[in-house]
Every structure is written in structure tokens, then in C-alpha cells.
Length: 221
Image (cartoon, rainbow, N blue to C red; front, side, top):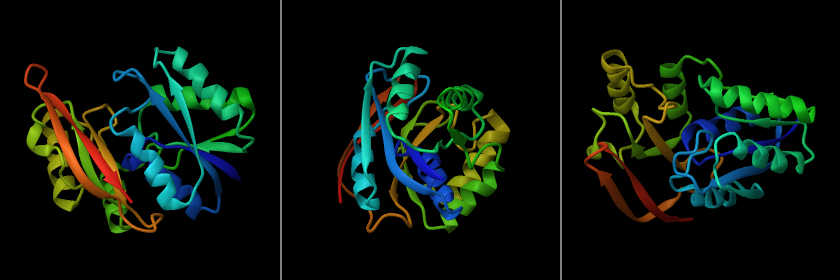
């Protein structure tokens, strides 16, 4: 099928697109939704501007859609941009979140196209290890779930990370893949990139009151 890929720049959405391509689907373009609301229920906001750089590294056209990020209303903006693409379906990185999965599925049903979610209900630890073994390089760019703290920002998603996050899942219930917003990632290299993203500088923003923070990353090809 000819698909659009909904990409946030993080591991789940990029890896889902990779799996869709391995399954024989063609990616017509990447859709990047840029929300003004940092607390958006649907869309990641940290370093969303770097999706354009990722798309360029993959040689895939990108369509950027701006939204104010108002809960539920932001879905109208997503539906509008998807309706304009003339594709057979949309691929997303939903893993376990019914909120995201159900709303994307409804939009696709309304438009008469397919919702493709290769990671849906996958074994999360195995998925992480498979992704690493496939050559995906990602870093942590936000954390919002103690005991994750400032020291986790900038860490590579490697086998050591997987071991630690699995333990935190058992001890504190933190999602292994971070889908509950516990942490967000940025893919800096993968088999689809012609070369890795070069991080020129980064700035850490940390809120001691909420015990959460994020990295603002400047990167180039």
C-alpha cells in the first residue's frame, strides 16, 4: 500500500515506518504535526523541528501541519492533513496507548483508508532489543517519571538502557517504551538514514518541582 507515516522523531514512529517498508509498503511522505501545546495528548513536541532533518536523511517528502494542540480539536487538524495525502493508509508507532490507536483508527475509518500499527501490542522488551540490533540509534530527550532524573537526558537507548528500564518497569510501573510520556526519544541514526544526525549542541531544561525535564537539541545532517 501507499502510506503516509505519522512521525514524531522518536523511536516508535520511525521504527514503525521502517517495519512498514520492510513489509513491502511504500511511504509516500512523512506527516509531522507541530503542536503549540506541550501537554498535547496526541503529539510529541520536544525537538519536533528535527523531523524535517530526519526526512531529508531518508529522502522522503515531509508535510508539516501546525495545530494549537487543543484536546480532541487537534484530531480535526490531523484528519484534515491526512485527507489531503491521497494514500491507502497511515502508519503510526502506537504500542499500547488506546487513546492514540483508537483515534487514528477512527480517522482512517472515516476517510476509508487503513490504519497500520506494526508495534501494536508487541513484546516491548523484545521490540527494543530488535530495534537496537537493527542499527537504530536513539537518545533520551525528555523524562517525566521519577526515579528517572536529569542524568537520563542524553542517554543512548542501548542494551544497558533496556535492562534498566525493564527493572524500573517492574519496580515502579514505568513503561518500557515510554509511551505514557515517562520518556521521549530522538532517533539520530537508523538504516533508513544516509548518515547520522550530527548533534552540534544541546541545552537541558530541568524543573526540580515536577522532577521532569527535556533537552533542546540542535542538530544537522
